[in-house]
Amino acid sequence: MKKINKLKIFNDPIYGFIRIPSALIFDLIEDNSFQRLRRISQMGLSSLVYPGALHTRFQHALGSMYLMQKAIRSLRFKGVEINEEEEQGLLIAILLHDIGHGPFSHAMENSIVEDIHHEEISLLLMERLNEKFNGSLTIAIEIFKGIYSKKFMNQLVSGQLDMDRADYLRRDSFYTGVAEGNISSERLITMLNVVNNELVIEEKGIYSVEKFLIARRLMYWQVYLHKTSLVAEQLLIRVFKRAKELTKKGVKLESSASFAFFLENDVDKAAFGEEALEHFLDLDDIDVLSAMKSWQNHEDYVLSQLCKMILHRNLLRIKIKKQPIKKERLENQRLETAQLLGISPEEATYFVFTGTISNQAYNAKKQNINILKKSGKLVDVAQASDQLNLKALSNKVIKYFICHPKAKIL
Image: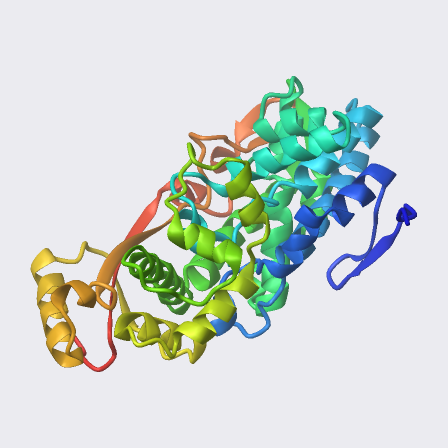
């Protein structure tokens, strides 16, 4: 029996009722590829730090669409021309912008598949849906790719003040309980305008922009780059790496068929065809968690210990430094860990490793935020600000970390 199409509303804990604006968008939400986002966590393993951070990409996508609806209304009120087809395109582009995320979102982005980012997979899925819905997503795809003729529309989906950031900062702040990220997204949207085909912020909204940029910086250090989340995600990457290594040696590991496909095959951009896409669409957080629950009892010491560390939150110790970790220090720690755990130096690399993290709240070189003065003049927000030195937020801060077992303290 064919499903009857209805225009529905969702009750969101942040914005209240979110209305589904069209039959096409309802059908896209009902599609299996989008429903899968209910099983993809928005913040990876951040719930190991913030227990409430269990929200999903599904919620974020709906929230972003809601904010886009408000942005369209606000801009139209100010005389910006957005026709009905463009409105639909904007709403679909932001709704589907994260549809290509894999299990635990960013945590395994470069592990399941190699050299292909979630945006590229999102585009593949959007093109597939465009065929299914007879070309109805053509404008949305152009906006998503950033090639639509009205540049401000591209910026609403991917830019310094896009609806993606406007939602995830507020949503992640809500679910983690970290008040520093609680931006006034609706105030920012009300202050949006368009000049020379580009998004600008009216002068009276400058303080909202300042808070937005500060909130983004603080949320990255305090939440997204929190050391516990960081080490947990690094362990998850190594779980997959070890499982893949064992599979190639002929060791049979219990997992779902789709997870097994990526364990048995090296899938890069060139190899990401229809078969790989089908398996990817069948993959979510549940596959990974289920596999780890099984693998924690595997006879391979490295794989079992990595899984136990994540499942039981008994993680590695992590130290974050301002200077790069010396190679000698890393090698000595690996040798000591190998001796301590009774494993080879090569196996010790799974438990002792280094990496870098960076934070840049405002990248004026990539795309700046212009403030529209009452005189009509456009000024970069870093120059227009009189309360905070926003230039400092334009500098990329790089830090270095080293992880090692807690049994041995450096």
